[in-house]
Length: 141
Image (cartoon, rainbow, N blue to C red; front, side, top):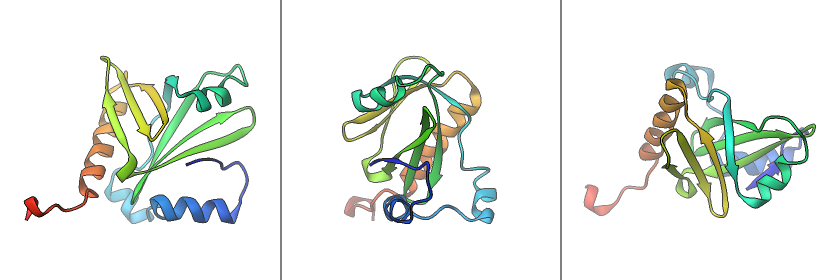
């Protein structure tokens, strides 16, 4: 779900909270050693996201926020802030080239550079959270 979150709209906030859960409490954030990523440099995106990003001449960057049931990828275009809301069951993460992570949800995707240890550590945290929220299969019992 790609939404404009520049303005305080209760309906959009409700939809986002319904998909990925309410934000973590301060105690939970402390226990997780933070829930936000460092600044991520976007290298490639899907067509609809690219159409938003080419509207200005700024460097294309984003950040990722962990939520209890998913992640939110936020980026800016012109003076607007957009969010790509991805529940864990629709999230696909790939590490393609040496320093590029790909984040997929349905037909949307964002590829970001992972040139620092902090970025790689954060993506490991996302993978761990996704594994914790995976459904329990009968074979696991």
